[in-house]
Length: 344
Image 1 (cartoon, rainbow, N blue to C red):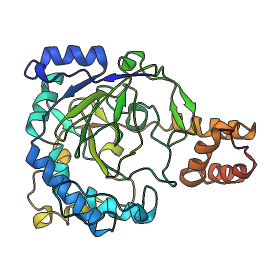
Image 2 (image 1 turned 90 degrees about the vertical axis):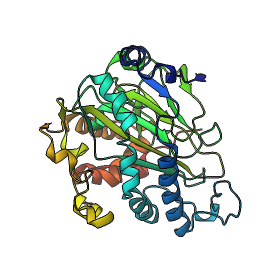
Image 3 (image 1 turned 30 degrees about the vertical axis):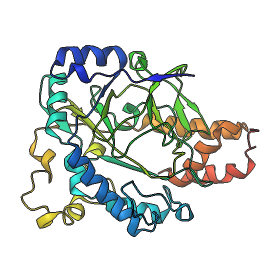
Image 4 (image 1 turned 180 degrees about the horizontal axis):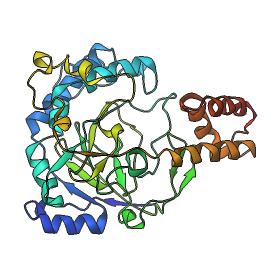
């Protein structure tokens, strides 16, 4: 694998045509210092305060970011991690950051029309690697999980400095030009599947808080392990033209949280807040999510496990816990003890 630095597109700011051409060529844009530094710092500090209260951090009396207390390692889907992460995710400043005017100007210039900011934003708080660390995200495309607009763009931004030690976002340049790729079983990917892509050339590199990487819904990308002593904190969000279709899962919660519950934790309970329910005031075209690809992958995992394919283990573990079809989940649980472990 040949890893080279991101192509820096900061000098193209203000030239929407040049940015669009670069995006069409590489499948991503790397722009430095796009988000306001004081807003990024405020969100980071809010998150670190909650991490400290949860016992994740060691006491610090210096100016640097706090070290992680490795005795309190936690990660998804552990209930203690999910509870703390839920508090972090509710932070209003975090949501507002992904609506930064400079970012929306760049995106609306690329689309040449108004932008829909998906309310289902993503906050990633990654502990340093430990024995219980789950597999990495693996090479993947965003479109299969979100669907809706094929013109979606994802914006990824670090809230703390990102270095080779902390791990980083990585993309496969030009991979978007192949469209939707087939997927292959992988025990090294969090969900047990990854895109069947050529990873011989990878673009990645250090990033500072406020920098962004913008990539298409078909650009193959991945995250790597955090081998440093501190939390890696990043945010990402999807954007699309308002005129394009969007799936309900990008807007509303299927179960668990509700926007009412979240907004109650905001100043004034979210009353009169322009970020509260903003998408409901837009004339959106909402389309159903096509579950058939997910069902086909579930059946492929069961079939692979029945033939003794050790590469199906991670995907089978995920099915056993998260499949919405109880028959499939039960079959996965029954197959797990019979599946051979792949030799390392």
